[in-house]
Image (cartoon, rainbow, N blue to C red; front, side, top):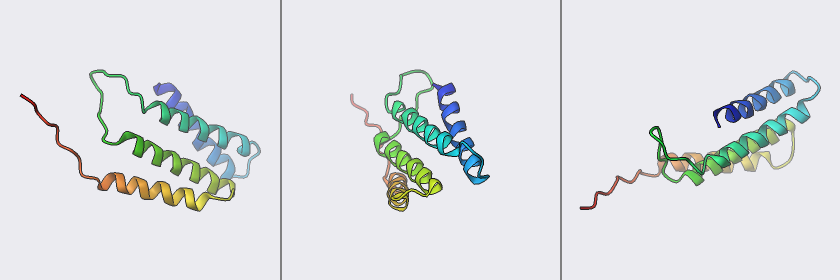
Length: 109
C-alpha cells in the first residue's frame, strides 16, 4: 500500500510540474495522478489492524475532504469549471474536522 501511495502522490506532483512548465503530457499525467491518489485515500478507509494502527476520529469525513481538496486542486490547475467550490468545500470540511473535539476512550468494567 505504501508503494501505491508513493506512486500516486509522485505522479500527481509530476503532473503539476508538467502543467506549470507547460510541458506536453500534463493533461494526461495530472488526472491519472489525481485519480490514483483519490483511490488510495478511499482504500485507507479500510485499515488493517496491526501494531502500528492509528485510530482516526471520523476518518470518512477527513478522507472525503482530502478527496475534494485534491480534485479541486486538479480542477484549478487544469482550469476546469467548479474548482473554487470543490476547494472551498474540501478546505472547510478539513477545518471542521480539526475543530471537532476528540472523544476520550470509554473504559467499561
